Structure formats: structure tokens, C-alpha cells
Length: 282
Image 1 (tube, one colour):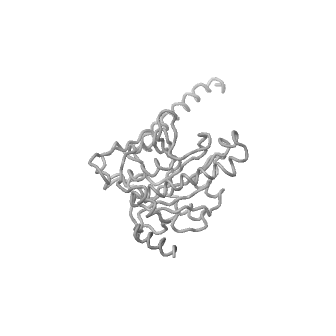
Image 2: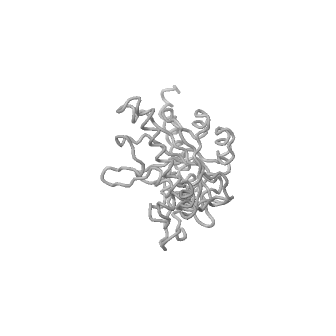
Image 3: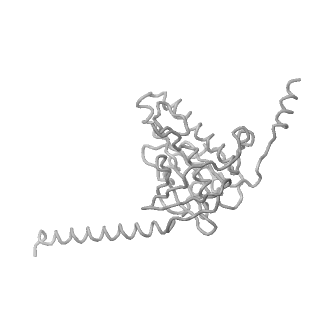
């Protein structure tokens, strides 16, 4: 029998094998994340439950909603850089709202985001590093440890890789232990070409850095409002972080922001601030 006679059989066998692998991976990947839509206990305010669903390795987060009664002025007053976190997870609805604040959609006609962007070029890409038992779906289920990529339009997370990579990320961040201990790290990267093709070099040195700063402050304020803490980390080896996270070649990391429950929440008062101001007025 000649090779050309068996090639169709070989091709058919390969296609069948690939199909079987696809079906098995689709089934088990979903099982690794969440086996079925899960009803969650009530959030911080209100009585409505919310649903997390997993389809083909995509985590559809609870839809954005009003989750806290903390005002903007209180969030600004209480905002601090937090580096010490309790050994407990954050909830999936908290993660949902922090990601929405980071780069979620807040205008339906044009799809504008919560973060202002020069020419609405939106050069940022948001990744989430989830630790083991780092994000609670309910009292017994947790989001699988791994790296996820946030999609603003569907408010969902796509699996990049499974497994807890916080220690590797900590090493890439010059050993900063809060990166390794936080249950979640948000890594913001930029595709500079989206902005520089319109604005040239000014996009790289001005507009994109401004935008990631806006996104970082959004994380700070929403985390504070939800009783969480975070800190902006810029000291890291770019190439090392890119390898750990699995960034695309045209994506450059700009921020690592650990997120967790503070060991010691900070609560200032306007009375204290006003006394400080008045003491400087003479």
C-alpha cells in the first residue's frame, strides 16, 4: 500500500482525535473553573442574588451594580496604599466591580469606558492573577487559580493560563511580598500602537501613561469603597512580568496592583483633616 493511499485515513484519524481533545478540554476546563451557574449570597447592599457562569473557559462575571453606600468623598478620604492583606479571599462580586471600575463600559451608544482615553483609542489591556482560593464564588466554591484577561464589552474573564503564579509574579516584581500574598493582582498592560498611530510619540510619553494612571486611581477608589485595599506597583522587570502573565508581544506591562482585604483598614475623618488644614493657616 502506497503512502498516498493511507493519507486520507491518517487525516481522518487526526481530525477525529483533535475533535475528541477539543470536547474533553471544553468539558474539563469548564469543570475546573465553575461547573454550573452559581447563585451567590446577597452583596453588600440590597437583597438580589447574582449569577456567575462559565462557558468554554470564559467567566461571565456578575453584572455591574450599585454595591456600596460609600460616597466619592469618603472613598477619597479613606484611600491609602495597602500592602498588608488578611488571609482571606475577596468575593467575585467585589472583583466584578473593581474590574468594571478599572476599564468597564459606562456608555452604551459608543462603548466608552470608566477611564478617559485620548481619542477613545483604549490602549490598555487588563489581566487578573488569581491565587489559590483567592476569589470566593460562594461559601464553598472558588474561582480557579490562574491568569485571566478582562473583556470590557462582555464583562467577562478569559482564561490565559491555569495555576497560581503569584510567587513568580512576586519574583518579577523585585520580591515585593504583597504581590505574592494578595489573593488577586490586577496587571495593566498597554498596546501603545493604538494611540501612537493617531498621536505619534506624544501618545507614548503622555496619553497612555495618563490613561493607566486614571485606571489605577479607579481601582484604588472602588477597592476602598468595597472595603478592600490595593497598592500601585511599578517596580518590576517588564519582560519577566510579560512571561509570567503570558502577555502578547505588542503588550507592555505598566502596573501591578495587588487587591485584598486589609489587615488594618484606614479610616480618617474630615474633622481630623480640617484640624490639620486649620493648623497650617496660622
